[in-house]
Image (cartoon, rainbow, N blue to C red):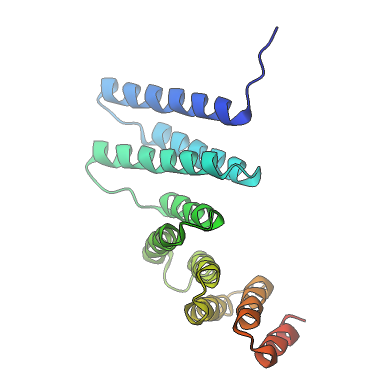
Length: 196
């Protein structure tokens, strides 16, 4: 008879086994394979996304931390920092997960600021990736009740995206939400008209 384990148990067991196995192999070979570690870190980040989408925030957090630990391990092996877009993506996801917990807003802001700094260095201050992170920061500030900072973030993201051929409706919706929280019905109506 086959025993059925919950997804969270299977994911944790697999991730622990893979992480330990890859690390041991890298140490014994005296050569860290960036490709292996990159794949492992990506797998952890992907598992974090899967858990996030199923509502298992705790497991999502564990997998995202494993991804960062794997990148840190590689960084230590190479004696140089690894702060590429993949690491920024993990920090961005962590920020969203911390915000979802509704009690770790400071950690959410910290993670998103790390993601922003890396993305800004890698792609420039006016890239779509930096705009997404600034917009996510705005959402967190709205949840924290800091509507002025939230509005600044959303407007900055909108300004960045106006230079690209992308749909800005989601950012306008976030600005609308801030105006509603502020109680500014006139501005809320103006933003709503822009969305339409």
